[in-house]
Length: 352
Ligand code: SAH
Image 1 (cartoon, rainbow, N blue to C red):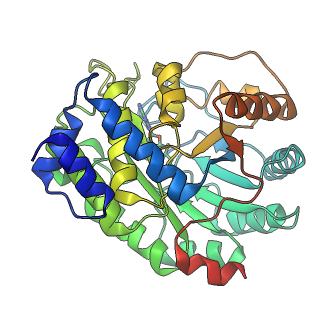
Image 2 (cartoon, rainbow, N blue to C red; image 1 turned 135 degrees about the horizontal axis):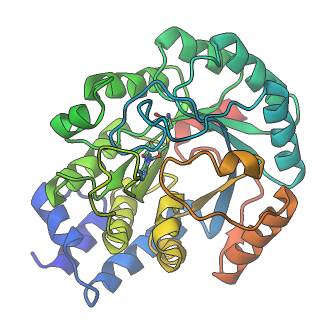
Image 3 (cartoon, helix red, strand yellow; image 1 turned 90 degrees about the vertical axis):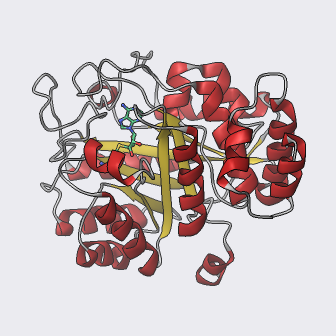
């Protein structure tokens, strides 16, 4: 089968073999337009022409983990750690809501200072502001805590599987295990969360076959969202000497994921934009339908360094939202005015 036939097969919803997926991941610049066009059509068919804009509050840079790629790893003594006070997090969420955001992503390192009670308090306060969906991205906690957060009103949870290669995962995460990560994802599904996973492109030791496995795992988990971004080396990590992930390959992975996952939210990730802002724009014409915007005060943004990132000119939440909206309109997309819940049917019954 040639690559066009493989793309047609995937578009029809037929399962691709690992070898077929690898063929698509290896397409060159001249061949890739067929893949990108098909991904664009499927995005329009399943997600419409609208981009979902999410606000993300990175509320703590303390972390108990030792992820080999992440600048917030617990061994890094060369960063200033911060915790946003609860009221400041709530006020930031309120300001974001007023600026037009309907999803607030609460992200942090794995920081147990934010106990079950504190997180539940945050969720309840933010939910009382208005029609806001809350996504938690705070790492691994036990079933009971995930349950309490759900009961307090959390809607979604983002916890990436990072890589589907179990050995590689375990080497990169000495504090935990691939099995536990998957258990967390399954617990969250069972609790009725809209679940987001995802993985990095360009991790040392990753192959095309691993990437095919990553996409198949997303399919198997039936995730509602998947964040796929290039790895960026951070000088204060074990992986500091490795090279960054390839952004062209990231676009191909995004397009192939769209072909296979159909009605799943796929963001144009921040890390893609950090390495190549043009490619981040292209992401919206080959599969992406979501974008996230940081909204915490700049004094914190500068310190939340999971990977190196250039400082940006300071603007208000409102100004940044306006610029993002202009950007989306400029690439011929529309702005979604709803919460951007999962496209998967089972959630619709909760929403009615
Ligand atoms: N502590 C939370 C949030 C992690 S940070 C959790 O464990 O889920 C959010 C995501 O940033 C991670 O899931 C990872 O995929 C990504 N990330 C971290 N370090 C990175 C790096 N150096 N390059 C690219 N992406 C990175």
